[in-house]
Image 1: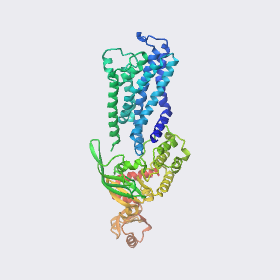
Image 2: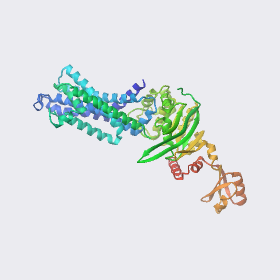
Image 3: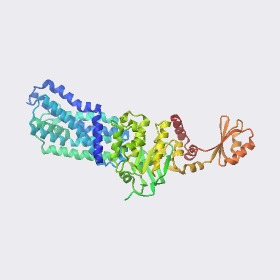
Image 4: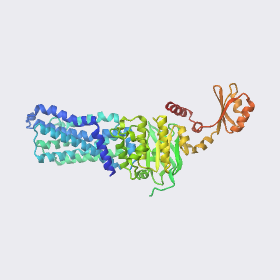
Length: 245
Length: 316
């Protein structure tokens, strides 16, 4: 019961923050319409036979989802700086409930971005079979798990001052090298490196909609491995952070 | 383990050091303090005395390197888990984007036996601003929100770390009245403060810390008694301080403009001797030494104390 109250509190607080909403939900939408609206009838992107609105809808879903999950780190860093984390630690709230609320809020943000982008895509004539749509969404939600852990890790590692640029830079870089903005092609240095990134498999999950393959075994392994590593590091960072003085 | 014990808070040989910029800081060097249930204790000391580290250990926010800390016979985390502990931590900002009532209600929902939210809001004097967003409050109002958060578990032990910083005189008075009401229900209260008159007025007992150690522990009246009981003040322009200091019952003499101040172990003997030796002395006053004097004497940290006094005066 207490963990529900805390999760609800976190959701209310996050969705009431107007500035956060404008940037977290608004930014991917604006980007989508800027890129896709003028090219709404382009159905052969770079000769690939892919529709531009669809390509950028799902690319931005990956980008917005990643940002949404990592953004819990920004909130954690601020709360640490403000002393709120200490105040919470002298309540009976369990550590697991605390993290569940953070991850839940991250998924709520990511989910809102997805729904808004899907709706925007439909408005520009994107059409996709229900099965494809579901498979893609399911895989994306799985692919976001390591980013939930990454958010918590960064939140307990960085300060409120440094986390903004760190998160912004990291998300942009991962999105770029993972094929969010343009197709990576099927070989080459970038392609080889990207295979080992969780963001690559996130984008790949979104490309299920483009008729791409679902994950190979390699995809599941990379995502699982990053999840284990990042959860372990996040746990370590949390323990180190709270064992202060 | 049941949390029922006549001892509210007990530290035995508790020590804590930490690394800061490559050097080891011995913040608390092994202290023994035992506080019975229902007592209100002031924790005094200059900055760096170890007060905050002690409070962290009592709250279970950090664990002692050696020694033990127990609350109501159990460990700090256990007492916190049972909703037996409420704390008002030092400054920092309140969490943003929530209304005062939402924040207090959420904190209540985390607790096993909380106060009614409205009751906690009323006790902290927040009824009028319950619908205000937390980041739009003044410093004093934010302190009252922290107080409501500390009260809402309906704790047996209340810890207040410099609770009246940022409050004006009126707010401080109102705050201490609320604390006193709460204490009347048999609560154990520990508060850290720089304001010695708060310890004097509201604590049953004071624990003085300096350099990580307890340098005095007892009823506030007893601590005062430990350093000369009274002072005599008189207008006496031309007297020699050395001669004054050697009067019977006098331990020290000082001049403040036209006046002299005598610190006495026996003010009765001193006043008689003063009148005999200096018939022209006038405007004579005898006063109990404040806790402030005891503080300076016992911590041997004149500069720090002066700074604290100046800060207090600036606020008053």
